[in-house]
Amino acid sequence: MTDKTMTPEDVVARLHSGMTLGIGGWGSRRKPMALVRALLRSDITDLTVISYGGPDVGLLAAAGRIRKLVAAFATLDSIPLEPHFRAARQRGAFELMEIDEAMFMWGLHAAANRLPFLPVRAGLGSDVMRVNPGLRTVTSPYEDGETLVAVPALRMDAALVHLNRADRLGNGQYLGPDPYFDDLFCEAADRAYLSCERLVDDFAAAAPQSLLVNRHTVTGVVEAPYGAHFTSCVPDYGRDEAFQKLYATTPWPEFAERFLRGDEKSYQSAVETWHEEQT
Amino acid sequence: MSRTTTTTRAEYCVIACADAWRDNGEVLASPMGLIPSIGARLAKHTFAPDLLLTDGEATLVGLDGAPEGWLPYRRHLTMVTGGRRHVMMGASQLDRFGNQNISCIGDWQQPARQLLGVRGAPVNTLNNPVSYWVPKHSRRVFVEKVDMVSGVGYDSAAAAGPSATRYHRIPRVVSDLAVLDFETLDRAMRLASVHPGVTTEEVEAATGFPLARPDELPFTREPTATELRLIRTVLDPDGLRDREVPPA
Image 1 (spheres, rainbow over the protein chains, first blue to last red):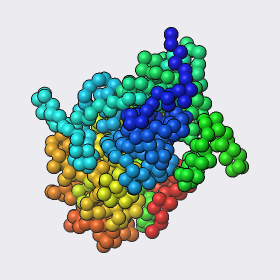
Image 2 (cartoon, rainbow over the protein chains, first blue to last red):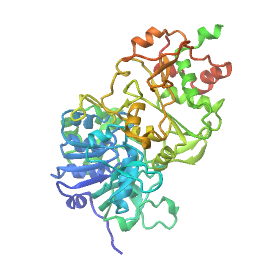
Image 3 (spheres, chains in turn purple, brown):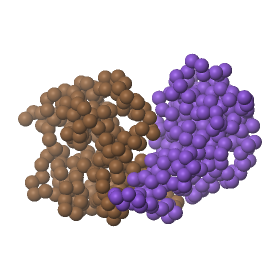
Image 4 (cartoon, chains in turn green, purple):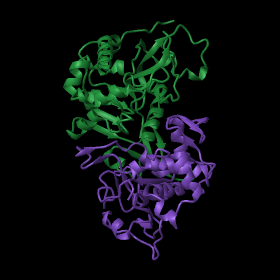
């Protein structure tokens, strides 16, 4: 069977400017940060990003790589407002499709199921309809005759997700309390790239319901220890709150200069050095 | 009568939040903010033992923190659309008919202040009861018209039609000054009670639109001795509630 392991650079070599990119995780939780950092080292730009937004959105926004964002929010969780997302919006840096969390989820389901849309009771009466003039409603063909919002499929060219474990074939396991929507992201994308904390030989001893992502939806697998840093990846590690605070309070050029100039290994060692300086 | 003078403003707020979940039955109480969280746990401790609570992540827990169920985001959203949930959300802006904004301040195209985004406010307000908690009652929050309707108010739901109004309900708004509701003919916000120590004039001065009021305006109820003991010794022994709402 196909060994799908690759490096973050191999993943980025398969991405291109102008594409639609889904990013898994939620807020500042289990974000594929090593893959996002690799993307930042490339020249790829003009992206349409689909995300339950966290610092993935913040980093790409600060670096000017987003043309359009599809999101219900962007947050760092313990720091409610994502500062770079916020600054980018306030300077009108990108187009936004602002939809509700549930609309977003049904958009993923529609894409995963190859449907043009799915109906939801959300958005009606809110300004989500005003700021997305392209959103349409659909009337139930049954007796109830209800009019609901037809959320369009959120189909994407590629998706990036990060899980706790994976095998070389592209099967992925989550060990934390919440799968978020990473399986749906992989199913909604033409190609999905899965980074993991640790590659394993097999899942013979795993609880089958923890095997969230199945290999037929995965194009490439990357072993990236601390690959979700500084977001959480429980139970392997929690959020690096001190470092997240640094990220949120340091002017972007200064942060990028110190932490994002080199490869993933130099990022991790720069973080380690910074932590040592704090003690 | 000594209890009237010793109950703090924050404690009246806890009571007013807890009462939002009275007679709700076996539903998920989703409090956002410290005082609503104390209120939800107080309700479960006393008059609403069947309430469900989460640990703030993906686990349903009892009052002792012991897990009793799994509620990741995907199932949480079904809890919302299934209606077996009563959330108490925050509001950066809230208007006369209960439209709420947590998205941005100013023009949406290029906001003066980007906030969280609409999050789940649109789906929440159309599907399960949504109450609001405002820790600092002011004209900045209680505005004539919100900049971006995130949570849907009564007038917006009515204008959007029967699919929007079918499960729409805003039981109450609790602030540091008062309890408000929408029990009026035109569903405009009404003063339901003021917390002891607060005058009607204070509430009106801190509200950016005219408030309806009943002929006889009650005070927010007193906590029972048991409730006060629970708040002070079990639910918030470190007095963090006074940081969210300082003593008057």
